[in-house]
Amino acid sequence: MKLRCLGCATDFPHGLYPLGCPKCGDAVEVVYDDLGPLEVDGGVGIWRFSGMLPVPEERWRVSLGEGNTPLVRLAEVSRAAGLPHLYFKNETANPTWSFKDRFHAAGLSAARMLGYSKVVTSTTGNHGASAAAYAAAAGMKCVVFCHPEIPAVQRRMIALYGALPVILEPRQAMLKTLVEDFGYWPATTLAPLPMANAYGVEGYKTIAYEIWRQLGRVPDHMVCPIAAGDALYGPWKGFCELRRMGLTDRVPAMHGAQAEGCNPFVESFRARSQRVAVEQQPRSIALSIRDETGGRPALQAIYDSGGSALDATEEEIVAALRLLASAGLLVEPASATALACARKAGFREEETVVCLLTGCGAKWPETLAKIWDEPVLENPTLEELKRLL
Image (cartoon, rainbow, N blue to C red):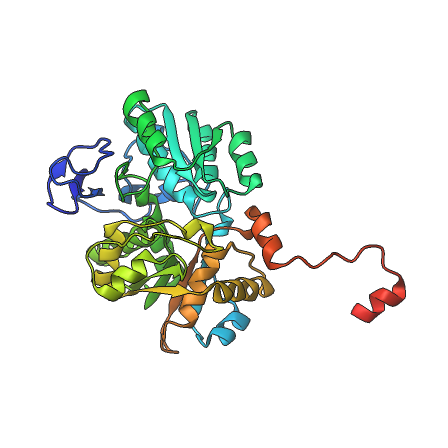
């Protein structure tokens, strides 16, 4: 294992390159000379795929039992979407109820391996809560710079895990200071810069491994809600590694799902640009994917896979959230965006489609109140209750 620049292909030894490639400034990722075996006996959480992950020694690994999440078919949702072979990778079943747990299991294990004892990150909610939980499991100090709109319940989660939540906007300058001047590990995305980290995205590869195993093949399409884009690039890299190992001869088309009010990947895809656009006035109920811009690796994965970047209106996102809830899955608006985009993508009926559900709706009570605020029936008489029954 080593690190390699996605731009100039220069190789580097293991380490933290928070400004990206020292030669060209592009994103740096982990590469493997030898892959596999895919699964090993006795691995916990994502570490049952330890042969495909960047921390070779068990003593550094951190796990809360993340991964092994369900791949679910919902008949009523499939009928409503007109997609008979529609599946949902339900990442709300992770320890902190979001897919971020895979990211931090890999990233903070790498931090321990490289000698770090303090971690800092920036969040709209899920990322920070997960970072705090895994920092606690790793015995690391943790500071989380929070978006002003972060739900109160997630701020409390961060604090109860033992981390320090700090409401701050903008957040990147202070994060950079803690990394450069105070020796903190940045639990940040593969790209964009200025503060990058090559290791966390490796945890997302395990989503692809599990889907391949659960389906017995790779799907035709995978739809991922994206902000920075690691949620798409990680599974894409995992599918490519399965092909490299000879376990599949094909890979899915990868589709990035965004809100119409904040869709920099969609703007870039429509223009066939090689750079992700910058959204000047981001707006959406889907705060988790309301980033002004994103990383080039995810955009390149969309192109290389023959996929697309799609967006949905606020009304379509809320309708998708309600549809999933009516079938038994309560997700946050960012997750529902994957379904909203899949419904309008034009996939053929015979194609297999997997939507990534990234986070649980119960962690966003203020948002749910905007969607559903009807009063609860209290102390009804039998006659009042009978009218509703």
